[in-house]
Amino acid sequence: MTEHSIQDAAILSGWRKSSYSGAEGGSCLEVLDHHPHGTPVRDSKAPRGPVIVVPVGAWSAFVEAVKGGVFGGR
Image (cartoon, rainbow, N blue to C red; front, top):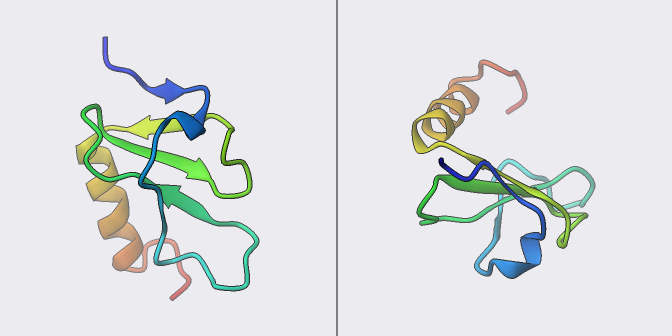
């Protein structure tokens, strides 16, 4: 079975903030590239909190939707 969550995000290193997160802080996502089970995603305000691991295809579709303006914003 594929892993869908990790309870302690601090066990992983190499997190980067989403380019769609503002510099003023607040609601920020961080992602981790090159994880064997997909794309781990965490809340930057909870660096030791739980992580969801999104399958590669679903993450790619989400990123393309954001870039395409499906959710508004930029």
